[in-house]
Image (cartoon, rainbow, N blue to C red; front, side, top):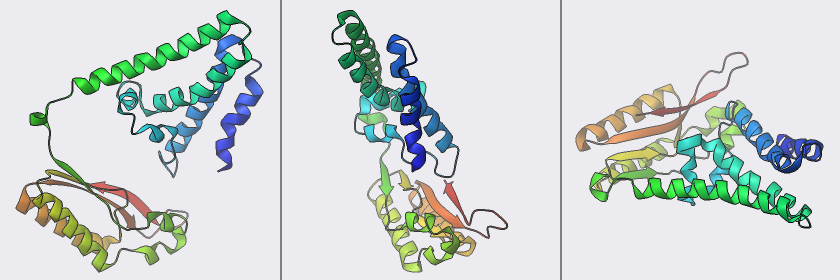
Length: 231
């Protein structure tokens, strides 16, 4: 958690040292660097600022053009820009330029996103999909990895997940996805889950994206589980 203070510290140290409007780029750049480092670590993309914008579809399309970190950058850039405008409110050219640059970039990205959404395929070109959630407490295992096997999904939980998956297929979904860590399994129970999913896909002609945490023997210094997807 302390690592999330790093962008603020970097901004505090460099904001006054950079000339003009370029100083507003310090905080978003530092935040993107931190998120990039975190994305290559144990937690992946969890906690990214970009995820807060999922309901703003037009802005989220930026990820298709510049990557998801660009969404974080644009959102994080807003506060330093407002601060810069406030600090330079007595100098109209500087304040106007800062406002114009940020609003222009944001408008361009939103326009791109709106156009991309407008040009997407019609209803006749889409495929029915379904997302399956479960009551699996993946976080409980993450904070207690040494006792990962204590968090294995029960036979009832596995059966419930398979029944909900088949219900989605019967409702017309052609692509069915489980949320991350939809089940927590070991090798023997994974074989049973895989067989059950294979039976559903064969009988109903659907694709199922299985997302699960596979508990393994960590060995010396290894992780006691693996985050896996299987289609």
